[in-house]
Figure 1 (cartoon, rainbow, N blue to C red):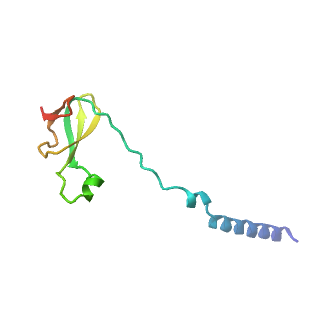
Figure 2 (cartoon, rainbow, N blue to C red):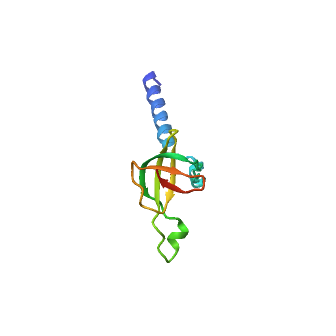
Length: 112
C-alpha cells in the first residue's frame, strides 16, 4: 500500500465514524423528566414607591375552571424608594404608571 492510499483509507474511516457519531443520541435526553417550574417568591416589603408597570395578572387555574367570571386583577411593578422592584396584584384599575403609592404593613396599597 502506498502512503497516499493509507491516508485515503484513514480519512474514509474517520469520515464514517464522524457521520455515525452524529447519528447517535444521548439516551438521557429521551428519558429525562420534563423541566420543573420553580416558583419565584418575592417578599412583600412595606414602604413607598412609584408604579413602573401595570398589566393584567394571570388568572389562577382554579378561577379559570370556575363557572363565574373572576374579578379583574392587575399586577403592578413598583420601584420602591430603596431601588428594589416589587410586584403586587391588586383588584383595582385605579393605579397607573407614574403613580406614587404606599404599601402598608396591613397589605393595603394606597395612592400617595
